[in-house]
Image (cartoon, rainbow, N blue to C red; front, side, top):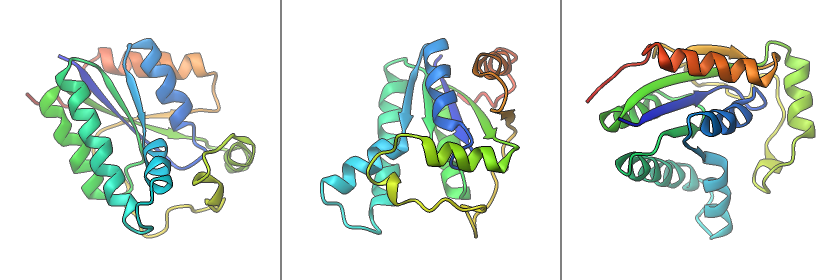
Length: 171
């Protein structure tokens, strides 16, 4: 049965980098929400609507890949309970885990944001000390990974977490 790894974390915390490496290691497919959002905005989806449309496309792709037997790593933060519930619902197609990335050094997180290559839509993102006011933290059990450590160690921790069967298994 395939697995779903739901990434969570603030911008610059290492979600995308870790998601890509998890996908290589499993193997699996990392679905980056920012890529979908950027494509929809370029295609003319009205500003203000692209968020809901992006998540619909994101989860539809995930479900399709899971049905084909692929492991899926969802590279999107979980700052709303509805997103967490939607992510967990994919567990009906496979095992489910949540991995939260943190960068415990806020100056390093901000440096990462300033130095990364970005999609056009990301270029408008404001680098802020609290980039998610008015949001909630996930309620699901999750592995928290400090990405200041070497990437290989972070990936090994995630693979061990998955192999222990720590995530909910819903069939």
